[in-house]
Image (cartoon, rainbow, N blue to C red; front, side, top):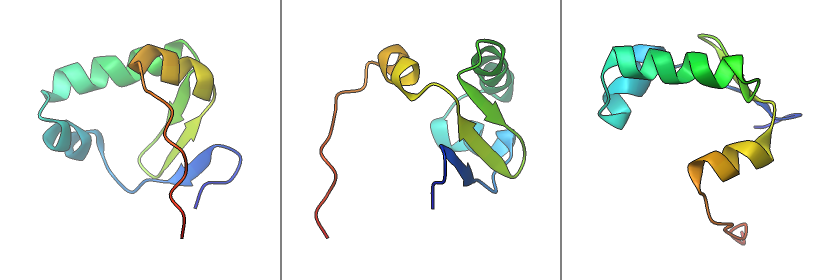
Length: 69
């Protein structure tokens, strides 16, 4: 599903805000900040991660090994 850090994401900002329990204004500002710092590219159909390592650092994500199938 992911090719070169890019995948289809048929969600609008409204859907993301509702799913995350955030206001649309906060979601919009956060996405704008992530775009401005060149961490992601996002439009209504696609999300591209430009700097995965920096996103992990920013989110304080802990590494999770891939699930075995």
